[in-house]
Length: 134
Image 1: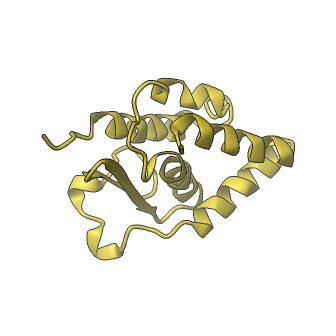
Image 2: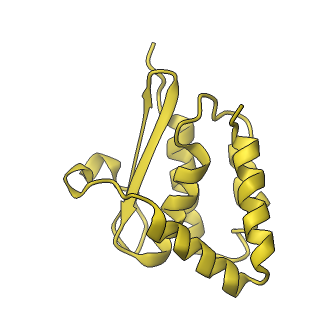
Image 3: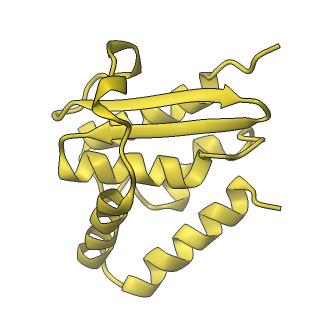
């Protein structure tokens, strides 16, 4: 079964293969370019993530038993961070547990600016706080 842990392990493996952080940034950018963004007409104020230097939106909602995550950004690296979050969480039925440690496991805290790290943390917080329907 697909889980947050298996997705994280797959991402870590991909990042490990490419080597140093210059190449890892390139891979993150590729992920961002490959991800289908949230359509422009759905980039609404309620989905905007504050604090990013580029406009960034992250729509999270439970659709039946799974979490739906879509996002968009006009910035190259912010779009890549959206792709990381979408790849990790979109379509999962359980997102509890490992969320706080993701930045450490992906080694992003040391390799992102403080502002981008904060934006990523805000996206993860949105994931954690997305209410499940009753």
